[in-house]
Image (cartoon, rainbow, N blue to C red; front, side, top):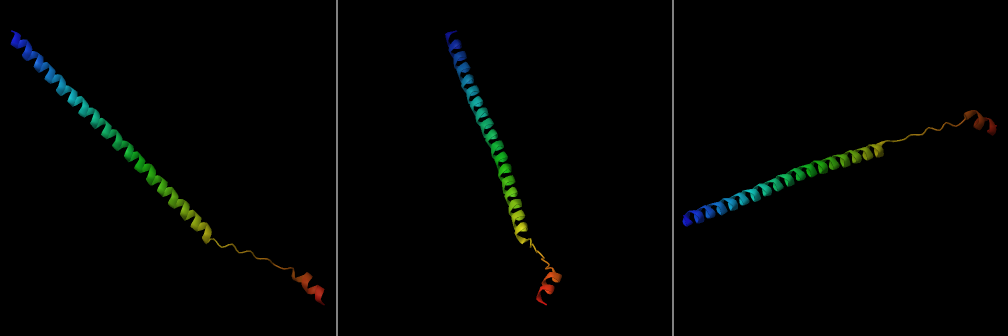
Length: 84
């Protein structure tokens, strides 16, 4: 009878240790999954920042390429009348 109690105690302790290892492994996996999700979110944010920077550069380049031409017309009547 005493041997049976010892055997049951050993089985109980062993099963608790196995359960504990499984819980630790599940917690590790959950942590890893959470980190993967955060990494993917950060990757999306970084790619959006890169795209926004490219768009800004293209906008600046487009503004640099614009040529502004100003036509000034002289009043021909006033300049011609003063010389004669």
